[in-house]
Length: 235
Image 1 (cartoon, rainbow, N blue to C red):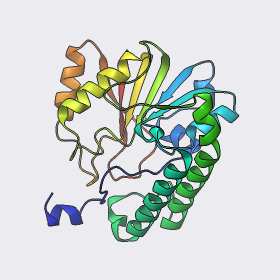
Image 2 (tube, one colour):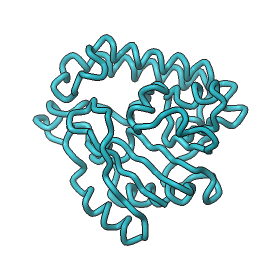
Image 3 (cartoon, helix red, strand yellow):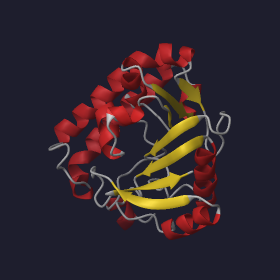
Image 4 (cartoon, rainbow, N blue to C red):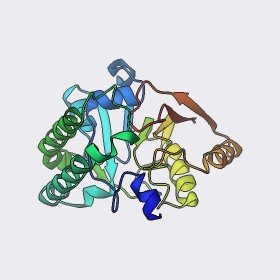
C-alpha cells in the first residue's frame, strides 16, 4: 500500500483486537434476539466482542471462535487495551471513512468499544474454561460438520483483503459453511479503505459453483462508508 493509499485507509498494523456489543451485532446482521432462540450460533472470528457474553446471560447458545483465544486473559487484556487506544487515536483524523448516524460521535463510538471490551474481559476467564470461547484459526475450525445453525463472521474477511489472499477467503468461507446447517453471514464487504473487495464477484461465482446460494443482502448498519450489505450463504 502506498503512502497515498495509507492516508485514505484506516491503519491497522496486524489485525485489530477490538470488539462490538450484542446490540451492534444484532443491527449489523439484521437480527432480533428471538432469531437466536433455539439455535446454536457460531461467531467467528469473535475477537473481543461481548456478543457471546451477553448471549450467554440471555440463555442463548453462542460459541465464539478466534485465534486470540490461545492466549490467557492477562495477555488478551493487554493487547485489547493497546488496540482500543490505537483505534480511538485514529478516529478523529479518519472520520471521512465512516458514516456516523449509528454512533453519532467519535466519543460515543469509543464508548461502545469500551463497553464491549469490559463485558468480554469479565466473561472470558470463565467462558474459556466452560467452552464458550474456542481457539480456532481459519481456514480450519475444530468443529464437526453441521455443528451450528447460524454462523456470523464480522470484520475479518474482505475487511483485510489487502493482506489475506483470495484463496484464504474461499477456504475460510467453505469452512464456515461446512459447520453451518442454515446460513453463514459475513460483514463487511469493504476493505480498510472503505472500497469494495475487488474480487467479490469471483468469490460469489466460486461459491455458487460449489452449490451454495450466495447473495448480497442489505443490512441496516453502516459505519465504514458503503458497508450496507452482507454476504449470506444459504447452506
